[in-house]
Length: 280
Length: 298
Image (tube, rainbow over all chains, first blue to last red; front, side):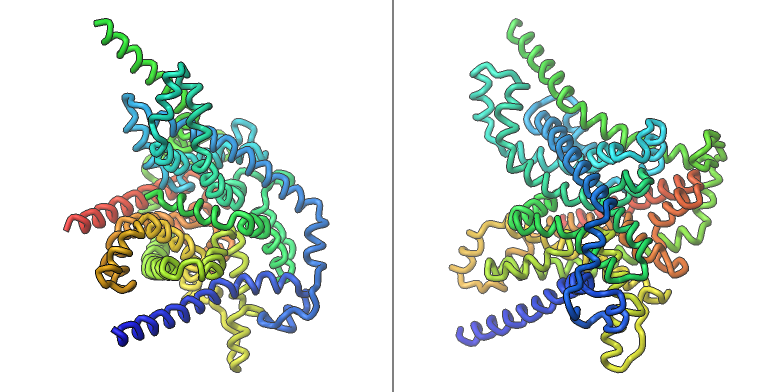
């Protein structure tokens, strides 16, 4: 017994050592990014990647933060994020309601359609969506990014929310039924408020994805004034490609909003991701 | 009689109400998912630059070209390599990390936070970060190698190593995702089971091996499917990190499709690549699902 306990302890020590090694693997690239952002251009070339920054040089950050274009990208990202999330949550709740609580013909077919849509590769839709954007004169506006973001996030959101709403006790809805509430009022007054935990989970999971979306913003917009933050990286990279420190400062700034959100919502964020993960 | 007609009316009301609620979702999915897929297949039978109105139908010629296009098959092979290595590297490490956190509990919160970090970055940011991190001149490996008196290390510039360097970066980015995925799996296993096992004298590792892991099998299966589909449609990170190069050593189906469609504006052929991709991904995913489900019956 004592021998066994010792063995367990040694096993756990090895596990902690391996885990700490992985901590380094996950963290070193991050540290490289943040520290390099505080270096001067020449310092990177002379000192090499491993050196600690000599003084905390702030000009890189200053250059980006005082650049009007950066704030245009930022504003666009915020608008796209907020409007997309609003429509996404509303529409997925609309769809999850009958899918989780009504019996009607075609219910299973529609549900299967939603599930199957979760693994559609974006590229198979890209050219027609591009054509559609041009035909509707929405090409090169931020507005085109909103329905696209919503449409691609819908299948998984409807799927998760349907599962969530199935868990809301029927008695609550029946009580409202007896009170003479119609189905539409029941949705807005009973089901929607009770779904808040599920909705906030979805908001977090999809929020990260929409904030980081690249491929549609890249193909459906063209001018600087209509592009989002991931494209800002693309632009700065073109402009400062030989200035590693500048690029790293830019990357750090682009991740910063997510890190702040993570600091505030830590456990909720992990849980949100977990719910997003349970889609299989 | 009267009762029946009332029941009929009620079920008709239900159906109408369902349609009203489902309408926005069905419309959006029809416009942005289903219609484009059909249109892509139609476009794949045309010669078309995407800008001019004249689409010329050219029968099977794009498809014929696709089947005999060595670049496409090289890209497919690269996707398959990513798929296999992602499974081999990401799945076990993801499970190990999740198991560690599940066993260690709150004490290791700092580990959880740091391990989670890569998941917050966009693929574009990860791509650029590692482009510089692995760079020949100021990159980290060159720095390490110089420290020990070696020369420059060029992982991304070398045709032989570029794809593997890319795969390691992909793993860095997605291992936390699978970690979270398995954490979700673990959290759905009741603590009571562990307590019951502990009363019977089982150690934590015995519990993990004979109770928790077998219960994690459905989670592992769906993680495998997700990883396979994800690997086959990979784009952002590779596009910004290597743009398919050097040569075609890191070209993927999606980057090849993008270049044909939006760089050289050969949208007819681009559509054929996209449609081919769609068929291959669906077929492979269906095949793997079938194999996994058969394994479950034993």
